[in-house]
Length: 103
Image (cartoon, rainbow, N blue to C red):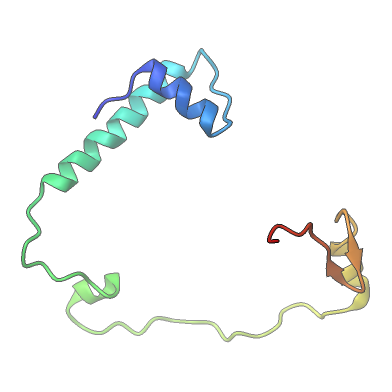
């Protein structure tokens, strides 16, 4: 599957992305390279290959992952909250107000 300049113009319009005409050809080549790679990966026969639950399962021996403790690293103060919400369009009693999207 190879994209054309027209396909890329349509995709950029749908995604609302501005693609600079100077970089359009290079971007098109990169996208087509990606699709070529996906086609190569789809061509590999994976019949009988069990999916890994985790990438470290391929190592053969169990690996103990080092996880940090889940602790609060910054004090939760009203001043810090107010500073974080200063740029919000609408706030009430420390909560962000958003428009209703489900009727």
